[in-house]
Image: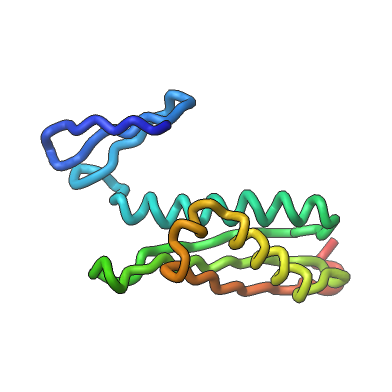
Length: 131
């Protein structure tokens, strides 16, 4: 459970189960939309990397960028861009399938349903750079 306490300045302090806290809202560097985009990115990353480990698919690098697109509730959606680097023996198709499975498994993405889009940029590193 996350607790949010309003501080009368248009923002609040959110405290997580671990005791870690973050300021959200008007007087913060993080808007609620930023936190939604971060939640999506974190869920997909965690699920993807766990699936890649189980499938024995070596990932050399993983990064993502996410944002809320649209200003009206009826048209707003979260866009996630995933950047994955694999070695020369890796399969881009396998990585794409793992990303799709990670999206399906994410509880946050499930809540968003059609209001979520994942764009993948998968690169294969060849030669001595991959070692």
